[in-house]
Length: 288
Image 1 (cartoon, rainbow, N blue to C red):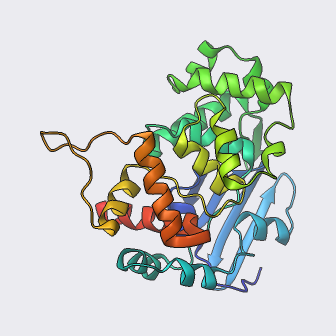
Image 2: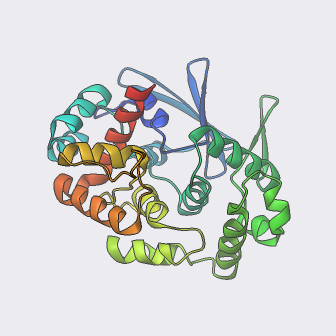
């Protein structure tokens, strides 16, 4: 497929927004909507195939948000020296458009966990509660099915090494099983209402709600805050992070989260979510 605007597949899949992609022999492999996708970029050509059934170009364009006017988005969010450096280094990174169920479960698992741990939890959940898909003799597993997760006991879910999150996953799955339209019914809500509605779900705090709003509901103004983004926002504001008497960073409070997220949305505008992803990848790359 010929790319009509700038896009960097490696940055997009390496930046920490998705957890079920891996690269081998120059190809990226991912499990999306029950299909195994195999994708590689060569300049302005994007090569892809899917199993067990092919997918159309439009599916790929939608998933990687190739319809976004990235040039204009980056121009709008380029408000300070830090984001400018991030844009220069990672130009072509795009937000991935994820399915609501997959994104919600992924980010509930992502609370208080490293990317490696998140990937492990989702792999375990998929192997236990997803469907097996064999491609060229290799077994892949689709994302956990709502029905299987809803019927499972909390103790069985805990076998996937998800810890305290098992109860939240069970309760969410049961709610969605009882009302299959529960999540899609939220799609017409504006960002602030959606965020509050998502927070009514078990295990969903401010950050998870913002991540799901951004990655699954097209709310590009959403600006999730974690420990990395908190530090960079204080730096941009020219302010000091709240610390204890011994100099350690104080835990992020809900009120502080709300204030920082509101500042970022005012500062970066309607595409603040893109700024967040560029800043997150940039600050993490500096720490490596």
